[in-house]
Length: 451
Image 1 (cartoon, rainbow, N blue to C red):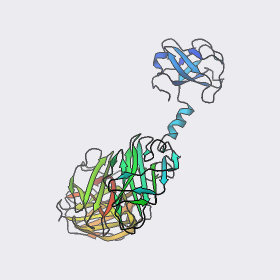
Image 2: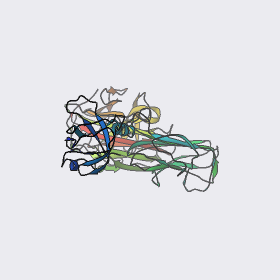
Image 3: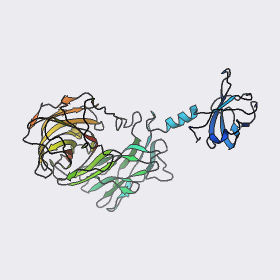
Image 4: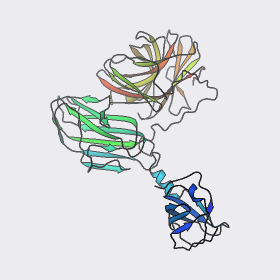
């Protein structure tokens, strides 16, 4: 990789060179301001009559450069004393930077699979894969480590995997392991549930690795397994994740209560039944919730500064969950932090693509209206909950943060004077399920932003 400098001066040749020499001198004293070798320079004549030549400097000795001539598809030629020498970024540099970027249109990621494999005991085992399906960016190296997919550069990634088991009454678990540590939430199935799938979204550093792990209650032979990781941002691979930009309305008042999640999580955790893990990383609040009481609403609540309407609460969320388990995430207004506190809110229900309004208490809320969002589960969903008048609340949703639509019913009546706002998450199945939701921000606006 070449080196670069923002302060390298425009210099000049100290002595003429022909098209074959591999050493040149620049103006005395200028060499110290060029970067350490290796780096690229360009020579051109002051009159601009000749096509410039790019040279790669492989050794720098004060003002004397050892060079590779005609570099990056240019042609070596003779140059006169005093011709201009300048440090430049060349086409090769840009191509390299673009090809290694998570926004590069070529997908970055890898996929692997395998056939049958015997699993024994109740300790999580990393699946050893046998077949490379694709490898864009050096993610897969089955020869060195057949259980791992390795992150080539820092960024956001989507990790997905599934295992096909024989139909039986055995209990099975499936999870993602990151750098040797199992993720807090895992999927489970038994009896006729022959396939278990899981998804994980996170920010990774270069050389981090992920593994697909499983265990079976009494041991059995799995039929097949598949595992993949994809950088978020490349065309065609999870490119809707974490790519959306939100523009504040020009008249919006920003309150100190706004939760951008760039520091600590803050707020008060009012958790209902089940196990919930709240985490904050790189400006994203995430919750992984294993629900044992459908309809409960574990919340992360923050004091509401405006004490009267109109008030608008806004968020942008994503949810992940096992198909049919109805994972949801949303925003709410409550009149307290106790389990019995009244609640009104709106949520995105991933498995059915519903945007729904909720009311009740923190311990038990129910859906009152819904609107269908025709979009993939992975799409970023914007939502606003508006306190418009006494005991009157509205909710709107958007897929771009610009054009907003009301829910099916224009308003919900609830006897409540809000003192807190926050995020809530839940699983709406009748059996234990795992829901994962991320909140990019919670924003308070002291105005009515109804659609």
